[in-house]
Length: 265
Image (cartoon, rainbow, N blue to C red):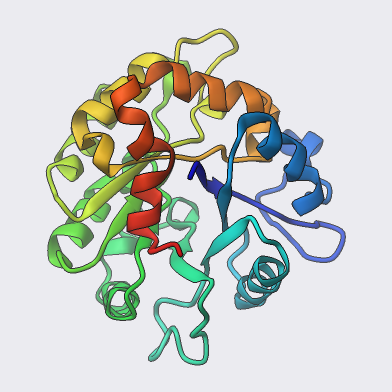
């Protein structure tokens, strides 16, 4: 089973997405399951995980409804208020497979290390769910603290922590991400790289570095569609990651890891 472990659906005509500025105008429109199907068929993708894109509980329920009605969507990584007393109250659902917060949009780069947030992430783990880390270099130290403090929780680093590929100055990013890879409870999505790079940049070294750090058994393919459309097609993203992985790594990267981490059925 080939799994796309990271994509989105949204409709900015009916809900507000504060990050959708004029810089992302080409994707500031509705994207739903019907839009994704041709790309899945072209790449032979069997199943997907849809991920939250706005920090509202209403979106989590919207995505769960879509998942119930869409055969290929096997899971939802939703949003909850991690600082609430019982963040997952009333949210038990077979299609809810993870939780994420857009931590890199928080003014405080140490948001993930706050006691109230750590309590919330612990509750996520106690519910049997992994927590997705949406971070850049500045938030990685706090992410490392959280992953060390909560070894019983499965953490998934989204988008390889968004290496600053355009700047060609990735030393700080590498030094901050490498220690996370040493923790057995931390996994990594090989996703979201095309929108961090200049056209024509070679992404293979970053994909290879991620696999070398985490091992194929802790790496997951994610398209980051439709965000990826700002820089490349779904098919190009799929091919880039496929071509950068060895044949003996692909079963894990393109399905087995996602099925294990998110307990897909």
